Image (cartoon, rainbow, N blue to C red; front, top):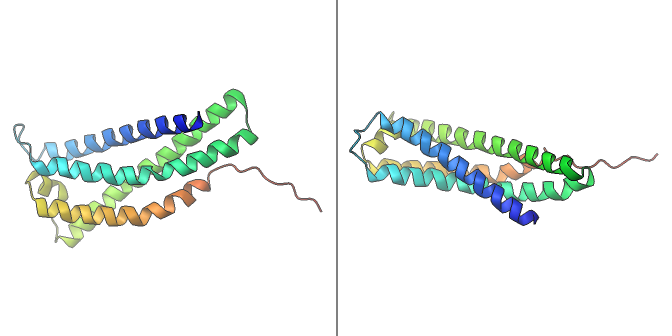
Length: 166
């Protein structure tokens, strides 16, 4: 039963994150293209962002499994469910902040490495080379950040304390 709850929560989290990223990309690019224009690079850019966020969201599974094993020793009934939901929301909030920070850093790094070009403008202009270059940047940072997410989230799990006898 716990695995089904974890699966559903990860799916909902992924859908929410994809929705937010899609909205941000549409908001940033809508001003730069006409309504009847639909460059291929927009869909490629979104796919890159969705994949990077999915890689980071996959780290949420192990932390949430650990949480569901630890919390029953401290809480029962409705309190247990409310604590699991609240901790999961905290973990998801931290990951969403990490994803948007990663997007911002990748955009900034793209601008620095490509001599001042704006990635959103390049996507709107259907510049495939720039989108692939941005993909390399965001995937390199995603793989680098991925290893530190689980230890960061594990620090927030309320492990039971062992009494000290002297």
